[in-house]
Amino acid sequence: MTRAIIAGLLLLALAACEIAPNEPGPAGGLVQPDYVQAVDSARVLSGTPADSAEDWLLAHLDMETTGLVPGYHEPIDLGLVITDRNGAVLDSLFLRLRADHPERLSAAAAQVNGYSVERWRDLGALGPRAAGDSLFAFHRRVAAERPVLLVAFNSQFDTAFLDHLLRSTGRSWRQLYHYFVLDIPSMAWARGDRELENAALAERLGVADEPRTATEHTGITGALLNVRIYQALMQHAGAAHPAPSQ
Image (cartoon, rainbow, N blue to C red; front, side, top):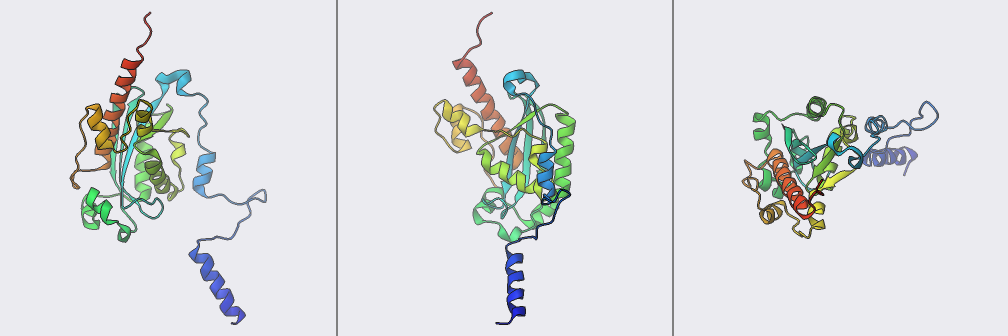
């Protein structure tokens, strides 16, 4: 095999693995991607809800996707509800998102959310940059400088998809939210509820479920269900641990 062929094969292998050559930075280090720099430049929160709970807000997130693997599958809508720490709703946001690789849509995801390229185009789905702009503008308007904790049902799933959505535009969810993310099933587990599906947990807590038909099941219906479950958990916690009398 000639050296030229070997060199060509090595270049193809590097391209397939998406390995980029190291670029020296100003101080001789490596140049970090924009989304890493975004994390480094994010505002550092000095306190916690234990210090000043009334200052903190919650962002209840739910995302519909083309499958279960972040970075391969893509988010196709985003629902977000901002509440205070007790779950009182302040505002909400719903975005349809355009998938760049609709051919990766799994059959199970299509059955749940009814995604199709044509339907999403008719519904005005946004690309990643426009979606990120809308999300950041929403947070500036509603939260301003108040600290915000992200809340989700199975939080690793939604956080990972949000991370991939924003990093494709050179941004990070850490620019909006605290490092820690609250997980609703974990909250319920602590009080003895072992349901891992939101519909089952909603039934146990006596709150209304979200629509389950594909054309009506969206990120915003899921986020609102998360809020209802959170409110019920807070009510149960208050009943189990009443505030001390003055």
